[in-house]
Image 1: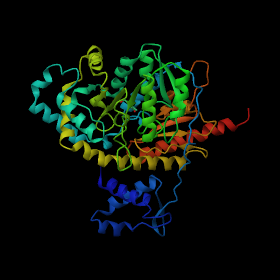
Image 2 (image 1 turned 45 degrees about the vertical axis):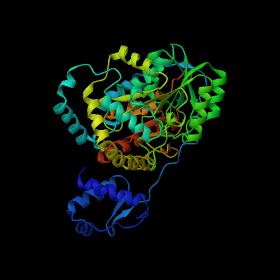
Image 3 (image 1 turned 120 degrees about the vertical axis):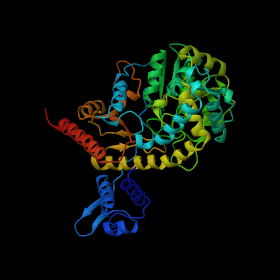
Image 4 (image 1 turned 180 degrees about the horizontal axis):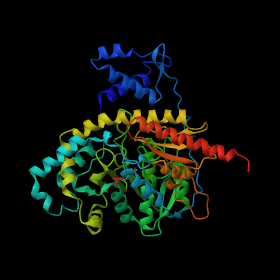
Length: 482
Ligand SMILES: Cc1ncc(COP(=O)(O)O)c(C=O)c1O
């Protein structure tokens, strides 16, 4: 991060914490440069960035003044109730387009939930990879064990215990990301055609896993703050022959909801009584904005039949393709399924990540990045308030780095995503977060999801301006007669 970005971030935090109120004047450029022993141009660059982000206004007489900021209204608390009928999942082609756009630097990548380089511990990771190549080169010339490298499994088990889930390293199975952890878990407890409860809106990678396994999705209405309600789940379990239930209890994707511990316990018990497996996706559990990490379902209900799945994709790098699954009642089956799927995961990333966990760099990085994600969410949601049409509503995530945006009726999220791609901006249209049954109107057609883990620069501001303009255009076109 450049010094001007650091200073801008500090000032932004001060504004967000109320140390400067709307209308307050920030210190003069020269004065601040002197106080902080920075160059005048560094301070000017910070102020300009804050101006571009909508925090400041340049005023010819009084210098830079804090601007009134408008946060868009939150989503209504229960997000659209889908008609609760199981359906086969298909049409995940748009998700592939987003994934390609995320890897193409020509695109402003607001679509796939992939952190930009500035949010990842690039230097520490490269160093750890190099150290492994230097100290353990022969280890990289054979198949790693199907369960994964013992060094990493040990570190993961230790860390899980710190957060209340006491598991042994023997129970940890290393996978190619959380996506594979979810796939193996589904394979372990379902047959094609079975019904699986999921959240609505649901993370689209999960829909892909269900499509690949030929499973039916029963998408239950999910509260924007607290996730699936135990009573809603109970009703569904009484009506349908459910085989598994997949939940993102900590900071769901796309809503950012956080399920209260009491709901986690009730849901785990309810599923346990009926012999239904709970597959818990804890991808974002380490990325909360509060001081303490929320407990996982596994930590709260260890005696139940739980598959705990997680990943280093959002905290270290998605390209490590490194995740894990723990299901104490199914360890041997998971190991076998991993073996017949792709033998094992590569040793190099595993050993490097084991080092980062052991030497504390993983924790250090989390401490740094969590406030950065919180600031990014707050910044982008207020830009949406400023730039998008009235009536736009935005989620209030308690962790993670995505925003779920409800556009006013009359704006089509899928059309917006296509128009945005033509402007070299990728966004995720709401419809891909739902397994829409055939012959039904797609759900979430006026929603989009935005990845906020992007640098707060002029390019982002331009992209958000363009998206706002495209929404206004759609509304104007809809209101024209004929
Ligand atoms: C909730 C959730 N689960 C799983 C994944 C997949 O993670 P991985 O890259 O580790 O396969 C993602 C990635 O976007 C995600 O958001």
